[in-house]
Image 1 (cartoon, rainbow, N blue to C red):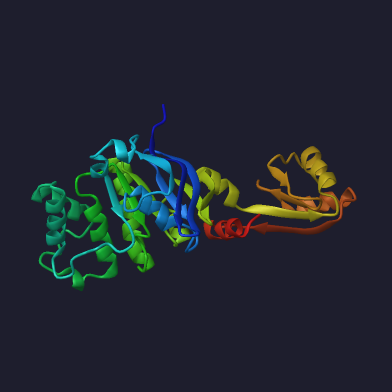
Image 2 (cartoon, rainbow, N blue to C red):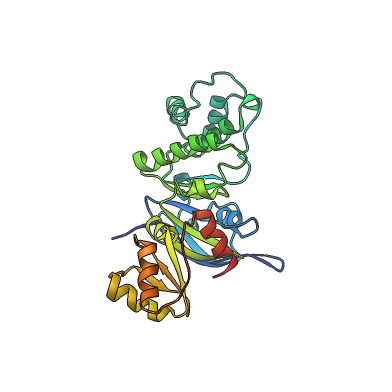
Length: 302
């Protein structure tokens, strides 16, 4: 039986007359790295704040790790969250920051704190103050602080914000290790869509406060993989030729003229065959659609 790390039902948040999150219903299985994608103002941070317990919903409900927050006083001890600014103490070292948070939470021994810093590749910073850290190091420390208490679920809002590709690669590697080796479910938002495509195992697309699509990595790869766009005078007549003469099955008729073919095809042979059978070819070209391109097309409407 499948169990869910996050379940929401008609979850909404309204600020005065603005509906920041609008009727969000979704299920995220345990063990996933779920990537939340959306433009600024789409409602991502508001949704994550509600799930992290920082703000209350206007309506709707949600549960984390199978429990509703109002029914489990200790639920958030199993959840680590990084929302917006990490809240580091700049004049303290990495270990001192960890110790301060652990004391506030009443959890974790000093050896465990050092182990977490080692996992996050900042265990050898010694007495170096956080205000002397690079942005990437600060973000890794912020993630380390979410791991205090060994939570089962991480909620990370733009953990790569402002860092360069090399810095994100270190964070990506860390999150994959936490997911694969420790079994942590990770709910992450990011504006670096191409990088997110190398990290997430499933995705949600958010627009105007709503989740407009939720799909797995395999489903996204299927939708965004290379395809041959065939434009003819009559797509249905062309489709008959594809099936009966070339035995092509992986295609979709888009409209009266266009066909999207998603299997290896000799385009020159295809054109020659169609012309031979009196099907004029107006265009025949290969296309590649990245996650970013798919997102912008999705955000603009289909």
